[in-house]
Image (cartoon, rainbow, N blue to C red; front, side, top):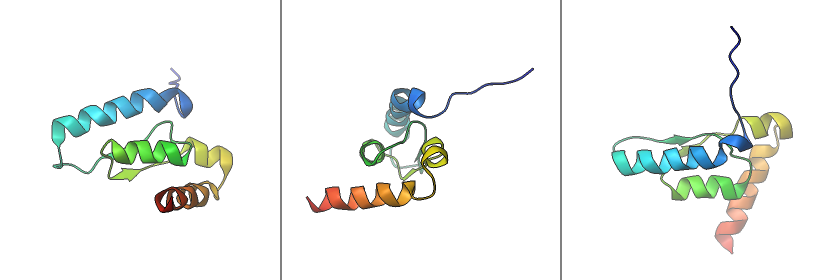
Length: 82
């Protein structure tokens, strides 16, 4: 039997919802790592605002290459300055 999974954009809304539920249920007692549908700096910021301690990018990194993380970090820094 071959298992198929979802990855990337199809998980964006659901993963954010699950993160919010986990944060509400656990408060600050756990380190939460957000995953699923993280493509942009806005996605990262939404997850940090929802209570994630860390944000993992996987599919976007695979499709956009090793400079994806640098682009996200530059945009986050720019947004913080403005």
